[in-house]
Image (cartoon, rainbow, N blue to C red; front, side, top):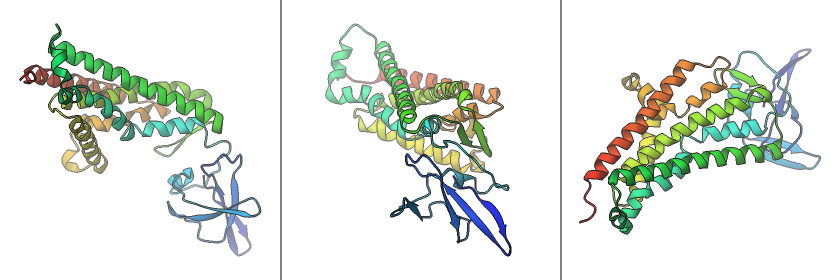
Length: 297
């Protein structure tokens, strides 16, 4: 966090900068800035720790650099880096990182067995192809849900022992400070929303897996689609303005609504409906194609 305080000293202003480093340092590091205080994101500074040691750090993780455009100076005290912040950062990995872990399993569920020949043996059993597909999808959903629960618990527990607890600072539409007593239920609902988004990814990967006979195709195809749609969503091109709310990747970050003081329930309901629709559509397409696919020949 950067704290700018203007102290009039006769003719010149003295600028003080408070730093928070991604280390287990129990206090802020305060410096008198003899340079231009308008620090750029990613700029390196020399940080003195103790009397002799010096460390050079990048500012990518310093929270206040993201809010340096605010008009008024402010001061924040307490444990800014805490388990709540670590858990919040984990939620942001739902955009790209966690989908990769999901695709590695769900993308291999049908295509991997088709390439190894074991899918033919499964089809010899007295079960319909629809039942086989749905059982594969269900196992993928269980894995997806278990993965997110495991990552959430691991992040929160490790963060608690390493950094302790504290209020959560959210940099969205300005600066929002959420009390540690008011953040647990928000995380629960946010992870439920995030889990639904990842079930869409699992459904997409399963659908692509039914079209190909190698495990690499569903993984690469799913990630390529997610990245491509994320680019469209991020750019916000006027050509795609009307369809962006109905692109499933645009709902990967809708969990952020739960960290607003005034939660927009209408937008959350629309997000849930759109994502459930995608889960249904992807499964229907996958089942139809899997039933028509020539596997035994």
